[in-house]
Structure formats: structure tokens, C-alpha cells
Image 1: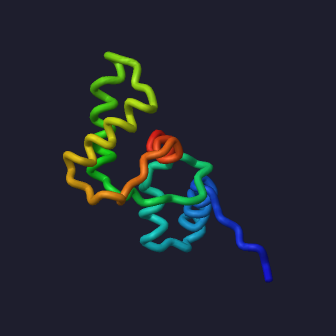
Image 2 (image 1 turned 135 degrees about the horizontal axis):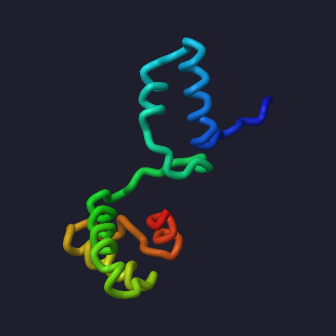
Length: 105
């Protein structure tokens, strides 16, 4: 049985360009080409569990990043406060250093 290979975003993009240039287009190829590649080496994309939290935390960081030093502990504390404000069910999220690293990416 052949080994399964996962393509990076950059490889997927190159494949789409090749397919479009070789008259093998589908609507999915067009959609893929219109997406901005943020991390070209990424092989997996995880969905955001609570998009409202991500947007609120991003806004907080953009507002305060030039006023103070935002430590990891401070960002996690703010995320926990935002979860309470957004009434996210308890236990839905676990705020760890790994969670914060993925958020930063």
C-alpha cells in the first residue's frame, strides 16, 4: 500500500496553478487560487472553536500592543475574561501555552 502524503499550502497552490494552465480547472481550483496563503508550509488547518473570542482577543492585542508589553500570561488571562463576557460554555476551551501558540500563528 502506498504511503499517504499531505501537501503543504505552497504545494497545493502550485498544483492549482498547474491544473489551471493545463485546462484541468474546477471551481475548487479557482477558489483555492483566490485564497491568501498565510503559512505556505502548513499541512493541516484547524477550525477556530469560538471565532468571536479570536476576534475579540485580536482586537485587544492590536489596541494595547503599543502601550504595554503583552505577556503570554496576560493574553491568556484576557482570553479567560472574554470567554466569560461572550458566555462560552464552561469546559469548551482549555487555555494552555499550546493554545496560545496556535492563536499567535
